Image 1 (cartoon, one colour):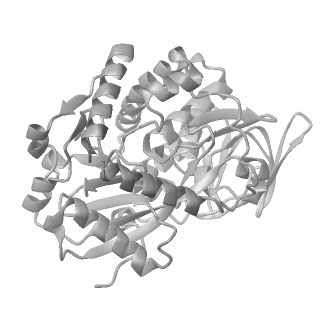
Image 2 (cartoon, rainbow, N blue to C red; image 1 turned 30 degrees about the horizontal axis):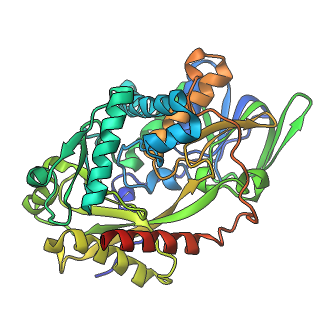
Image 3 (cartoon, rainbow, N blue to C red; image 1 turned 180 degrees about the vertical axis):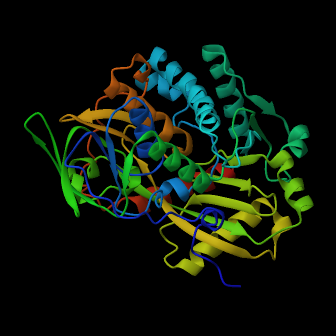
Length: 427
């Protein structure tokens, strides 16, 4: 079977090749990156009457925005207890409350602009592989409820068949506020809404440099330049040497997705009841979901650096899928692709400014929710709207020592996480 390396999502929503348009010599806001973040910011600013130009070195949405798994988790990497220890109780609780608001905000954005992106509020199950993990998850859920009032359903072992068709788990949590989308359709919808509002999108137009000049910014691109009053950088895991300062602070990590051949809808429904997506409590996180038509299963996770060729990487993903769902033994893979997620040393999504340039980056693998949310927030901040306030605005993240854009340390980190998962599974 020939395996397509093109994202499955692009079949129903092909990426748009845009005609070249002249770059205006001046605008209110220039945005670097035409994914969820940049398009969301452009939409908000254009609706407010600002002149906006968006630049992307590729076609619109070709990076992580149309390559992700399409689960609207809005998750945060630190637990609430860890976040309290790092940020203090008030801000930590505000972050988790804002995560809930961000998920609702995505739904409101989709509804407000009539975006047909197969949104399904199906819920999400997170499985515990060990009793110690399950106990920790229950404690975290109770703390979250006590501090914020946010509820998650504890799934005991006898309840598992209603949530997942696998005997791999001892229990878990269910969150009814999480759903799924078709990410490439969401990109297309945001593009149409932003351009309708007046934003001008320059695809396949790489930004080469941004310099402060006479109280504004000179944005140099491969096809010309413009003067902008404000600049937003929305490149996340796809930054380059045009912004060396950011590259030292943001680490791209490769993630790979595999998609099965068509299955019996009854089989998919038995493995993932109610079309619910799922994940696992692991250091090397994996997630699973049905495709919108209910005929395939998609699995994503960090690409192991020790698997050094495409065929082995795809087989690694297939075996991981079968380890959870042995019922899929012998099922073929039709699509597999990779994309970058981005992390900083802060380990949370962030909105910050440096030398007058605004950044919304570092979504830690949960950009489906955080990218449009923080894109909107940075736009509101520029507009002076008090709704631009967010608990994720902060000082810039510290630089990563000895890092200049090539993440040489990632193989050792992933190997270490894998070892921790293996040790935990033996307890």
